[in-house]
Length: 69
Image 1 (tube, rainbow, N blue to C red):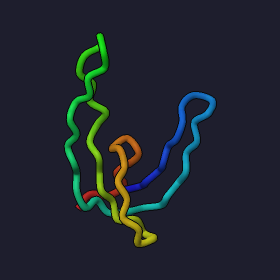
Image 2: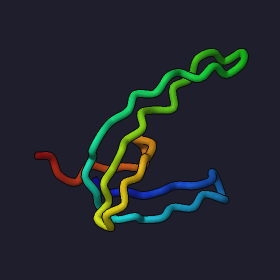
Image 3: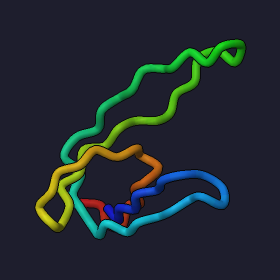
């Protein structure tokens, strides 16, 4: 996986490239209740072993598949 950490939105959006990693686990998330909107799902959490040796959890939108095995 190619991992980019995104923080903020709009003009305050900042993307940090964290390199590549291997997916260790995918954690399904529960829906959040958002007032009159109803249930909203923000996507799954993905546990990734980065090439730095660090294990981190990311929203699935922060990852891009670069190779399947």
